[in-house]
Length: 382
Image (cartoon, rainbow, N blue to C red; front, side):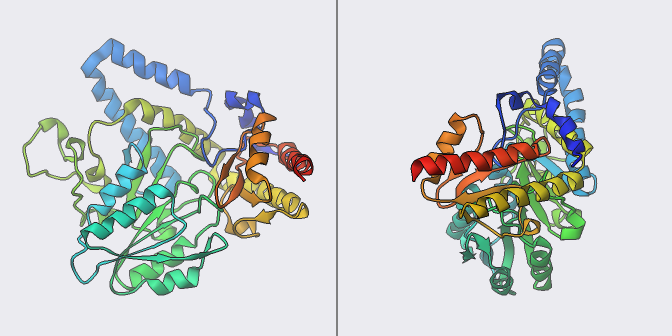
């Protein structure tokens, strides 16, 4: 089968080490990142503080790249250091002391988000954690848990331990029926699952550049629908969240329009311009094309591991999964270490198993080879 996306393999020097099946944890570095960082360093060296004028334009352009990827309107995406800060800012807008005091979430959230959601209990939030089945959210139970007392539904789009894909549009529709807002964590979906914020109907969305977006560490994003953002006032604020930060005005803060109010302190310009290189590749390749290839290769991996008798974490249907495959078997952690020693970059998660994340640059032969390597390793462990 012709695979036009393989043309992007040459853009990632990391692939010279061997099969890279870890896009779900840290995407490989695009070849243009060193040049982007060198330009940033040269601007700093040559211009000093005057460089801020150009940097601010660059930051707006990076946020614009994400808005394009998400079908989001201009000014609806803010950049930040990570999801811990950005989700924390969104949560800081809520008053849990009234009749709407419920925060509905699931037991499949990434630890950062789980810690943040549970911390809201100290402020009066009534947490409702919907349990999963086989590391997959029971959608009916989740929808049933959302009622008129709910202020916020905070859930992950794709579960990091199983790659189970949540029907976020159904969640948003139910939440809006009862007047609640939705905060969607898209860290494990953005870049490999198409995201259209209007189609999903979510109010707030967070994620980062480390994984499928191929942007490296240090950059997170927060989308806020313009209508919702206008009514939110974060308590976690910083001078860059002011409508005129370089006016250096005293309190009270005059919050910026749209998602700009969620920007806190001085941004990490270097990390954001580095991330832009990954966003550019994903946008050029097209998330729809990436998704089509991902579903085909996920099915290929699932078929291979099913034939081995491995336990498949998450749905068996690739259409109901994100971009990674998670399989478990006796000795999975040891097998993961051996795979890495043999040159296959992958990882293991307790309670889940071996995780493999093919991306646009992955060949079918690499998928087949890792299945065969696991079979070989399992025979030695038997």
